[in-house]
Image 1 (cartoon, rainbow, N blue to C red):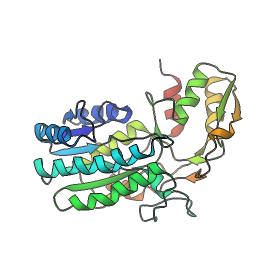
Image 2: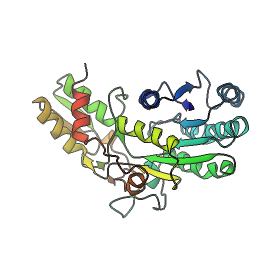
Image 3: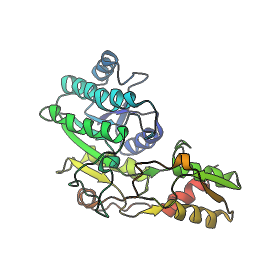
Length: 282
């Protein structure tokens, strides 16, 4: 299958490309096309003529100060891509990467796809707006929306939590400045996430909105303790008030029953193994 992957050169894109190639698929990217450049996207899609699309490109750093860019890229840019695919590759399967951030703060301890969204920042709102807008192409494309919870792995930018912690331990720093260390997150391994994306195009699920999660939460405090045990190195965690977000979500863990129903043999890599893999990178 010829698969167009947006964001191919990004952190997730590299792993998705590897997973697709292992499955015998032909992988093509958008090159240097800007997602907000409608003409460039149209030309790239027309040239690629994909049978399936995995849409990863977007502004991913939640706390980026450029608010407008979230909507320009994540929302409007996605609409332009879908329009081009609908015209040049009608009936293609398109997997659209949304985010578990759209759930925001909830009373439930485990968030299912039926949980009413409550976005608390512009990143989350732009992703939810993107999701809502995909309905306008649902008559011409097989659209699957995936909502990944946090995930990590080798090669992720140190702006993100786990790579930042790993970097400090690998350099054997004495201290690290963090925000709230008692928030809990559901961390998947990027290799598992890539495998899910591949599965979504090979066997389109009956449910068209799917969480990607392990169903297990880890606090920042627990991650620090695990890294310390693995490396034999202790780091002083200092809470920097500037890193504590006013709309911080205390507990964000996903219900993955839909994912397991569509991938019965799926067994996520334990977070401890992911952390060990990252800590042993050369």
